[in-house]
Amino acid sequence: MRAFNNDDLIRILTDEESQCRMLALEFLSEGYAPSHVILPQVFAAWDSYGVAQAFPDFAILSHLPIVPTSIAECCDRAQQMAAHRKITDPVARCAGKLLEQVICVAAGELRPHFEAIAQVATTSKIFFRVDTRSLKHRLDLYELEADTLAVRLDSAIETLSRQPNDTSAFRDGLQAMEALRFRHPNYIDMNTAIANTPSDDDSPRSISFKLSLGSLMQFEQIGVEASLARHLVDQRESIYVNTVEALVRIGSPLAAAHLLSQFNSAQPNAQRWIARGLQRIRATGLAAEIAHLRARVLDPALWLMLLVAEIRQFEEQSLLRITADVQQVQTYAGALLDALSVYVRIHATAPGSRGLQQAFMDYVQGANQEIQSKIESRLQ
Image (cartoon, rainbow, N blue to C red; front, side, top):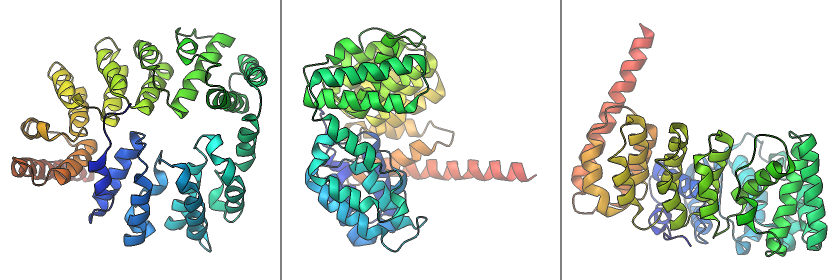
């Protein structure tokens, strides 16, 4: 299970500074944080600061944890927020994102709320991504026996082996896998499903692997970390990128450990994706492990990505090391600025924090000067 409860980031969701609130929510979103208190904090910020002002970039979040007990309130809020507003209105766009995230929940949890979701979806064009027909199909699949679902999955695989770009067939395969995994959890051994590296062809075995990996990106499964990790050293971007995503979705200390263990064996581009994965995952002791790895990295860009990954662990024990290393950075990096903004906020009163705050301000000043210099050179 996950080793962090993200209380430090969750506290910032109602912070006075809009930028910090948004960054905290983005970090929680990127890490697939599962906490049941995140959404209530988002709602509290909406009620205090206004929907558009609370989280200015809410509409472009990739993930929001929705627990079953919040679904009814999500439907009510989405309908109220979208009412009488144009689809370009920031509040309406937040409503669209909210209901869109609701239907990402496992279908079994959505059954009691289907009518409400369907009704809200008809009230505004902003809900164009809420496909209620597809949701109804997912719900119907949950009623089928395992063997019947397996036949549907095989049918999707057969279609994809002939028409690999058939997005409808891929969706059907994912939906059949969802129903099998949640309604008949012992029917498919996901470790076996992803055990072997697929070939480059469109064979049924290769398609089955891709569907299995896609399903693990949608819904995490503890226990498949080792089976996933072997694909981090695959030469194909489509494989190692999705593998990183599936490991981040799991978010366990074991997932983080496998990202670290495969780092040196991965190709350079894959290493960047692994570093990005380490920015998004949190685990006890991971900050020190990332620092140890970073000390052996020669590529400046990769070193910087790993520095951001260490900072985003938000461990107080890293404060002095981060302070010293930030002073070495001479190039502008938005990811570093964002991570430091939140780190400084979380540890504002920690011993040594004033030194980090000064290093941060110096870095911001240097970054601004670099940007200004680039602008001036382009105007000449």
